Image (tube, rainbow, N blue to C red; front, side):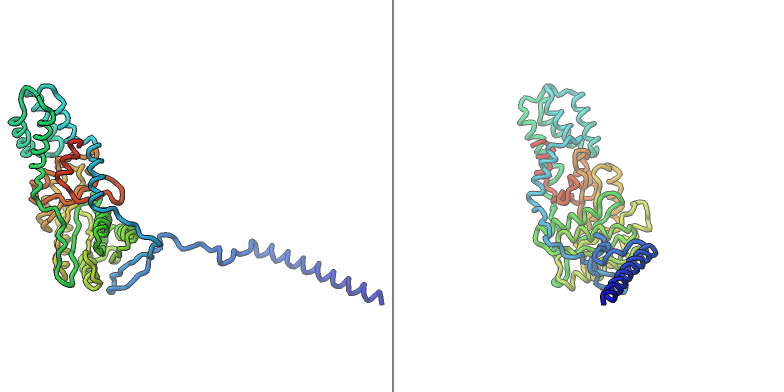
Length: 379
């Protein structure tokens, strides 16, 4: 019977060898093994959030809830920080005032240089003449005997030009059951969409509920940019298809705000050159369509403070088309010529309501005349 045992053992060994050969051949013919399902690529971080249809084409995009929402900085501490940054900057207006206070003797040439510098700061010819004439009356032509007195006079005259009597608060009163509506307009490159996102943070910090309307349907990244800003503080965004009707998006945003009891709807509009008549007319249409649903409380014009007199031309045209109620000055930092604050207010008869002095998410604050003057005087 021993021979039977050895036969069985031989058959088992042959089977094992045959199985090994077949497995080796299959591997060579198939190639590398497939990765298991759990190693498949995860969705991109840029995948949009949940989508809720609010119209045949318009959608409201709400990004996935973040574990912890950001807490925007309060308005009061914002301007205190921006004022310190302004006082440490080297803008043209600040230099002109510092140079005047530092001289031992103020002669005709000193006054001429002072006037030229003020005009270069975009203060404008009229305000420059007013400020220079007032200082001539108050300060001795022979020199500044008391620098503190000179600084006090400068502060007083500058504050008068900036005009603290203007109402710089945002008008956010609305009818019962309707949101306050803020339209934000401006040319390309002024930081308009970014300003909308930063303004949302200001309002959230003040305890208001906010909804964003992405009515800039011509720039593909504009809606995505707004959605990202909103997600960080728990604010939703209403958007439409790329190239769609911006007036429809704005209308649906306001309608959604009313349905959901939102305090403020901020409508971002496409940047446009003030020289393009067709685009400017379309901006007027957006405003008229919104007003079929709710009153437009504010039309904020975003101006780049570094553009000087070109910004003044933009302001005139936009004001004619949509009745601008307030100015937002961006990039009012060390490279800016702070005199534009006075010039644009004189030109439009409306106040500068918000200023930006940096790229940070909370570098937008309500404009404070006293703080602005103190800042450029280095106080």
